[in-house]
Amino acid sequence: MSHTAHAAQATPTTHTRTRTPAGAGAAAQPLQFHPPRSSPVARHAVAQRVWTVAEVQALLELPFSELMYQAQTVHRAHFDPNQVELATLLSVKTGGCPEDCGYCPQSVHFDTGVEAGKLMAVDQVREAAERAKTAGATRFCMGAAWRAPKDRDVAAVAELVRAVKDTGLEACCTLGMLDEGHAELLREAGLDYYNHNLDTAPDFYGEIISTRDFQDRLDTLVRVRNAGISVCCGGIVGMGESRLQRAGLIAELANLAPYPESVPINHLVKVAGTPLAEQPDLDPLEFVRTIAVARITMPTARVRLSAGRQSMGDAVQALCFVAGANSIFYGEKLLTTPNPDVDADMALLQRLGMKPARAVG
Ligand code: SAM
Ligand code: DTB
Ligand code: SF4
Image: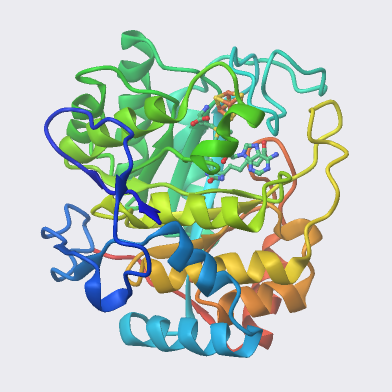
């Protein structure tokens, strides 16, 4: 069995694998301890174990009720099970991206009908953040279709972050790979979270993206962590990966040291014109299982039920909440594709007896 562990150290780590004795069980796993979180929601130091891919796979294979029970038990030890965080997304720079991520409507490599635009103006972003706050969101996440922002892009996004922070919302952004010094500039502007997904297992990554590699993602995550920004990092399920590869993705996320404060689990949104447009449907219960295993392996993280809710149905979403999801993207649009409307989401939360989490600070 192999396991991975990536320490957030001063220099980028290399994506290497080390061996543990075959059959090493939970008790035999080395323990790591979270340092105090840099998040505005400071969390207590929590023991962090290292997960082998085989252990994560064994969780994915549990009888469904057993898995739900374990996930609920972990969830209730750390969170109010009836609260859900509402995060609103805005695409501040849409389309024209030089990367070839096979799922993404914003890549120049695919003809999806998404038009390339310029970075949005500060006033427009401030107004969108104010609307999101009025609608009940506590976090505002800005996405940009860049491979890696240039220095002047980072300076401009820092102004957007300042505008969002002025509204009292938590600020998150996702801009692609960051160069030396970029994360620090964003942190100085008040950025709370940086979203940068590992997206899929290391051994499936090359099937989906050819213009960067897995290690590039890890390097940016180290820069974010070292700048004192909380990490939002997750992946996409339903791209044709095997269950073992889903286990590989979750093990990579759970073995980041410390694991991310925020873990978006996206269900592939099949967009016409992308290479994954005709991907066969994933069994919805497999998606629920993935959420549950994210919850069990990353007990104190916000696990976000992210892209794909529009075609999921209320019952599957309800199961995801039982499995330990406690955050959603909230608002009619994700970046370029639709999301359930806010009235439908509020009605669903009410039917489930759930409440939006209150803003922090
Ligand atoms: N360009 C930056 C990057 O890739 O990190 C930020 C924007 S990118 C659109 C953010 C994330 O959106 C991706 O990492 C991926 O997880 C998710 N995403 C993009 N297209 C998706 C789709 N069709 N279905 C599900 N998730 C998607
Ligand atoms: C994340 O993990 N999912 C969000 C957010 N982080 C930036 C993006 C989902 C995008 C879905 C496709 C689209 O709307 O373009
Ligand atoms: Fe570009 Fe991000 Fe889309 Fe990849 S996921 S094509 S990097 S916008």
